[in-house]
Length: 411
Image (cartoon, rainbow, N blue to C red; front, side, top):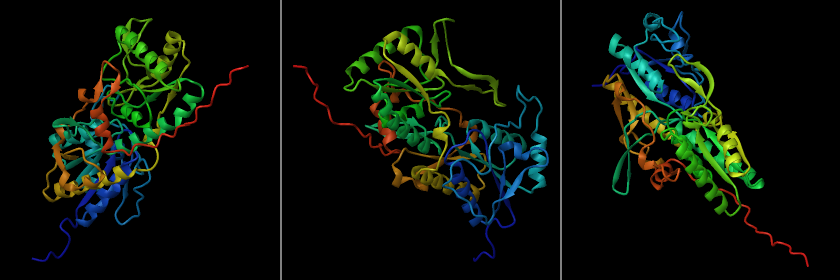
């Protein structure tokens, strides 16, 4: 029977993005908007994450509007607002959220975010019956998507989130560029990479020529620090041009000689509404201690927001499109409280809806770097991790100054 109108004509779907930005959020918004529009939904954008559903609301109409999904970040803006009570804000703002969902006649809510943003959405679904669909995003790649990585007969529970491929590409390129400075001065450069609790992004520096690496999953005790220093010295002295770029995650737990404790380095004592402090500065401490212990010049470089920034790369564009196709399936079946994810780690051409599935938003949580991906004894990323990464990234061309000048010996 021929339908007189689109299936969901008269209904409204709203999209919000919360937490840290990634290069893939705008493309996620565009992809979800386009598919929801085809189903007949009017599509609204909620600005500034959950904050846009407080007070009188901050809502824009995305229906039939041009949208640049290649542009990085999120045009809907973002915040770390938590609608539920927290230590920083004990007041529940759920009534304001519910009032605005009703006021703007929003029938379905799609939340683009990590564990915090989508966790709040799941609570609204469970406690208030709000129809929600979560959409993954994080450059840290630590959102548990239950994606399988098949390698040499093994099945490894891995992760792949929109935003990570673009950020990983940026870190690989950043590392490849900074090598020339390290080489020019025969230095060790300690490259600090975002990663509060997981070393997924840190490992991508290996594709740009990074060597060794420290991740939050394995703390650096007093004993392990001594072993690490020796490993760095051996690697540096055996390198033909006497330089190293060592990537370290911002969340590395490092032994402090003064306090006798192993802890992270805080850039600020303040916490956000989800209780997260701001990390930063570990690279400077490690570089300073390496110089003192080894007598080799070492410098720190913080990549900071660089991997978050810039255009959405091609792998991310195809990944977000495949996951948005899965959103259509969830909308058609009215299967709420779910998040679309990739089933298997696959190369670019296999990023299709048939390689996706969905998981219950209550089972998301966080997923650290699997032990198969990191060699704790050698402080290095494994062949298995490099295989995981090779599905996502093209290895950058690491240019090398190949000529070796003859040494002049005086007569």
